[in-house]
Length: 233
Ligand code: HPA
Image (cartoon, rainbow, N blue to C red):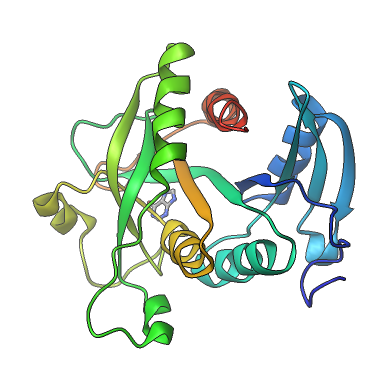
C-alpha cells in the first residue's frame, strides 16, 4: 500500500536499498549498474527503482537533502516496505585536515546539531551509529577495489549555510566531515531495529573553499556505488 510520500506497493522494494540524495543519481545507478531495473516510485520526483546486481535483489531511491527529507523516506521504507538495510551514498565537506577532495568516508557514527532525536524523549543524548556489519563489509569492499576509505565520525548538520559556527570546531573531537542526512537515517534504523550506513565522498572543503568539478564528482560517485552495491547480501 502506498504511503503519503512513496507510491510503490508493498513488495516493490528489495531488502537492501542504496540511497543517494539526488533523484537523477538514483536514475543513473538504475540505468548503469542495476539489471532489469523497474521504476517503483516517482512521487515528488523522488525516483526509486528495483532490480538485480550480481543476481541479488537491490533497490535504489533518492532521499532528497537534509534530515527532514531523509527522515521521512527512510522511516517509510523501514517501517512500511520492510526494507532491512539502507546505504546512503552522498557528498560531504572535509573537516579533518587529513581529508582531500574525492576521499571516501565511511560514517561510523555522527554528531549532530539537529533536534531529530528529541522525539524519543530520552534522558540523555543518543549516539547515531552505523550498522557494524555493513561498515565492516564496506571497508573490505573498498580495499578490494583499491579505494582508500576513512572510517570515523561525521557531523550531520541542519544547515548548509550557517551564520555563526565554524565547522573547524568539530576537529577537536576528531570529526572527519560534514553532511546533512546521516543522523536521521541512523536514528530511524535504531528505532525500527534495522541497519544503515552512510558512505560519503568529499566534494568540497568548506575551510579552504576548494570543491570538486562535476567530472570528479562523477568518478568518485562511481566508486561509492561500487562499494555500496558490493555490500548487498
Ligand atoms: N556542508 C554540509 N553538507 C555538505 C557539504 C558541506 O560543506 N558538502 C557536501 N555536503
